[in-house]
Image (cartoon, rainbow, N blue to C red; front, side, top):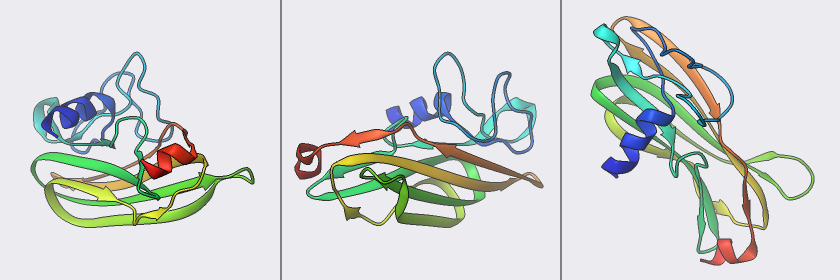
Length: 158
């Protein structure tokens, strides 16, 4: 798990108390190609206090045994007040609609936030998270939408 969190630090984040890194964005989209898609909840000196990202990276959608979930991981270097909402949407051919939601609201150093399990069907899935963090007297918000994950019948049974 520590290896994945290290990857997440480079992939996405939320910043409070310091400026976002060059080329970073604090809202929308998922892309990580060629650069950093976000920063971290930070303290002084430009260091990140928390990073947040999808697990698995880029997708956030996991399926098996007839169920599917969406997950975001939060990793902080110090206790931080954070509110995270993770949503799983599904498109079976009629457009994306919400099928599950999960939420964390509290002080954490390291946590995963997952939706409740939903029935898995063939189709397209997308994970979304919104986060509000409070660190060093500042409040920062961030939203991310994952890449689309297409699942087949075999993915749902595995």
